[in-house]
Length: 59
Image (cartoon, one colour):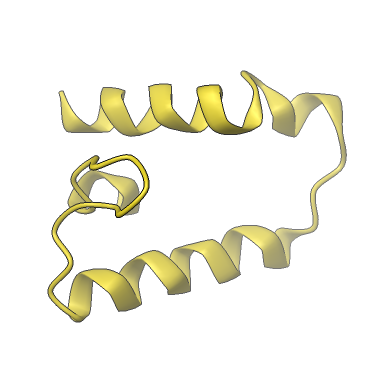
């Protein structure tokens, strides 16, 4: 359920299948993963902008 909410939020924020429409540097995904993991390790259970649980964002 939480993973679906995270995917829905990403589609709303960036557009569905945005990675198919435009080339995206791999480092964008690596930096995002680092940011999300750091927030989770700092004790942030939910994303501040969407209130989606952080744990499924690392799946």
